[in-house]
Image 1 (tube, rainbow, N blue to C red):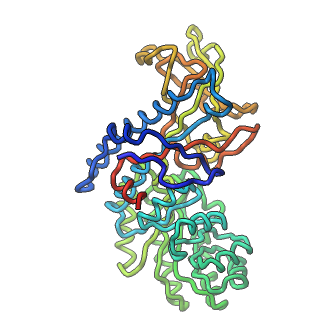
Image 2 (tube, rainbow, N blue to C red; image 1 turned 90 degrees about the vertical axis):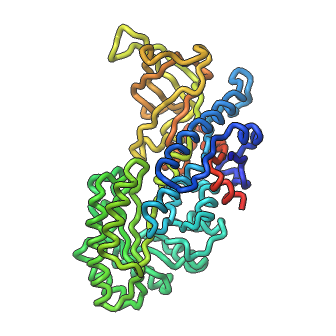
Image 3 (spheres, helix red, strand yellow; image 1 turned 30 degrees about the vertical axis):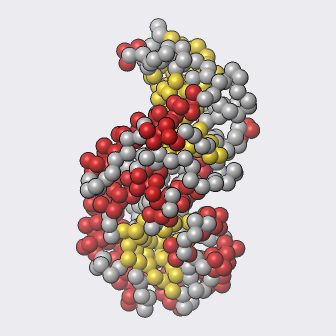
Length: 449
């Protein structure tokens, strides 16, 4: 089943687009996941890729770059809510004890937040704006954790006003601040972890060392503040599952210290770091560690972000210019510099901020009709539209077709840390169209609720 946009999305976030719903209903390949097995999820994901590609092609075919008005050939997304739903099923199969609190910063798309609410998830927020976005979905404030160890005073007062009590801390000054602004808060001590193998290291900025954890717990007790849990984060895009084991072991020590001081802790927040490719391996290590060190009455929450949305968004971009150059690796062959209407200051900000390497694929190639055989691949460097030399998407990539101005490329796995960190540098828009579909009937039913 495929759906048109199910809600009015604020214009400053994105522009939704209606399309021929009957066409997509008749050409969908949705699977009912009866047993929710891994094979079912894999088959459903493969069928969904074809569906997304069809939507991309149909939308691109609507644009005539020789006649269109300014901006009509702008980049656009296809967002598959069915992929988010499948990821949730994977989570339930592998980490059923752990309740997800979606990391809003990763992708604050209103439709994503609405689906998270319907799935029963909570939200990890780091600012007033993110708290307000979460509350706009209609959830109870108890389903939000203000997981920012160093908070703005006015934001603290706002959290108190709207009833968001759960929040993290990792230093003494934060405790004094909370005492003054929100003494009724429910606090989680964020501890330091080893994230040396993670894609984005967070321990460089946040987390109390084990040497000072007890001192902070004692200070909180003296200030008559309520510490209810421990949190950690092994780093975004973590690569070593043993980091979870060590962090859980350290959290157990802090739980015991807190009990000795007089705190009654009831929740462990295991943070994020989960990715598509390594999820089962990480979940297995984490699940075993939780069962070993924390009895069933302890509530476990997590803060997944990219795990849910990275694969759900596919970006299409238009080729706006081309230059003939010499291929530095094969000087006897032609190569080209192509310029897209999106770059690292826009939706490809994940290259700069998230260490990603988006892979270009050909969506349309008018000069060829069809793409070439692999043996005839053409070398390209791919550039963004701004007048800055760092605005490069790929230094060298091989594609099976001779691209020209007006052709389209698409990039998968563009749902995490892309739109949310885009800018309007050089006057290019960050207000790009999103076409929402669902390759899973379960997600459609939730969003139509």
